[in-house]
Amino acid sequence: MSWLGSLFGTTNFVNKSLDIVDQLVTDKDKAAELKAAFYLQELRTPTIPIIDAIHKMGRQSLAFAQMGFYYVTIQQYGTGAITPELVAGVSGAASIYTLVKGKGK
Image (cartoon, rainbow, N blue to C red; front, side):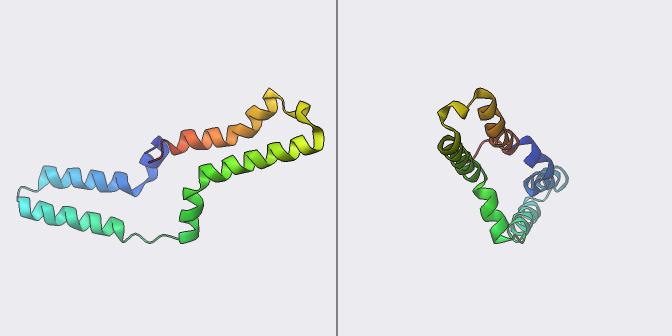
């Protein structure tokens, strides 16, 4: 998980809740019951399917957009138009997204 996801994700909340249960609940059966309730509540969290799909395709979409941009640029202006500055500028968005998102699974 990325550093940004760890700040705002529900997984962080669930993990902290499970740690609190481990620290404060001495009855092992009750602790297991509470942990199961936390996991089930996390699974019941409603999502919007199109947003989830866009989120899961983020890196791929940025890569295809880059390829499309380079293709159009080469078709219109030739290969000489692709400079290191242009590559850095176009690839910057995908690189920043990858750094913020973190390693994929």
